[in-house]
Image (cartoon, rainbow, N blue to C red; front, side, top):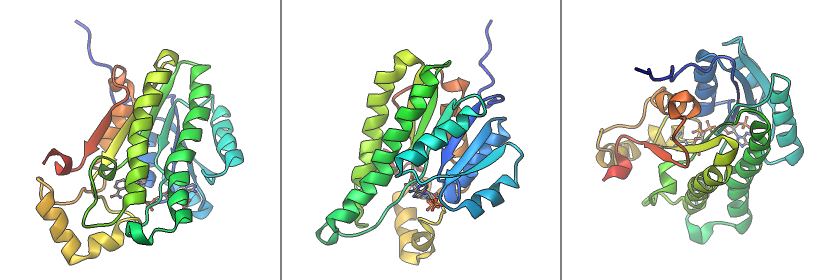
Length: 253
Ligand SMILES: NC(=O)c1ccc[n+]([C@@H]2O[C@H](COP(=O)([O-])OP(=O)(O)OC[C@H]3O[C@@H](n4cnc5c(N)ncnc54)[C@H](OP(=O)(O)O)[C@@H]3O)[C@@H](O)[C@H]2O)c1
């Protein structure tokens, strides 16, 4: 009888995590390093990345603005120094909360540039490297707001961007399956981070989250770790093109 692979063992793998200077990405870098992967931790705030690298020997800080094509190329080249990227976690992201009537077109475009175009180009560069070797895994950090509307919060630009991430996840998975590249996404509900701190500190927002979440609370730090390790690792060898909502049941209603 065969046994399941060690689903959380990433020893010898090289992972790139974008947006590793804070919030979810910082934790993702630590989780992947804890599972044995060499992690290239990328973001613009280098001091934060250097601080993160002091927490685990397997973490290498790398300054990168993901909206810049030269920076994107340099990030994938950095992974090449360690043998080439096996896992890409497209976590860096940006959101504003403007009503659509007040959304300047440039702000709408900027959201799509960070959340969609940069993710697309980085995925292409990583998948080209993966395809030349044994394949690899891409994990996109989408959002429940790519699956359902945010009302009464006004986040149409962000929702459009995350909806595109979920669609790209399917398209790229289908296109790159023959290269051994799996592409999946996680759609988190509400988790503490710089992006959500103000919202989660607000009493009425807390009540709104409790009322609309079957599990009755926001996510806790660490509650995305299992989904990440599954989708990035050998336990998901037959899973591609999927989006896993980790949301306490928000989208199950
Ligand atoms: N927290 C939640 O409840 C939640 C829910 C659903 C989805 N998400 C998604 O989770 C991801 C992480 O968000 P978070 O909540 O952890 O927010 P966060 O703490 O604000 O982190 C965002 C990260 O993205 C990086 N980033 C932004 N623009 C960048 C750029 N141009 N180049 C490189 N890095 C850039 C930031 O680093 P620098 O500023 O140092 O560059 C930062 O590390 C995002 O994609 C977000 O949409 C979060």
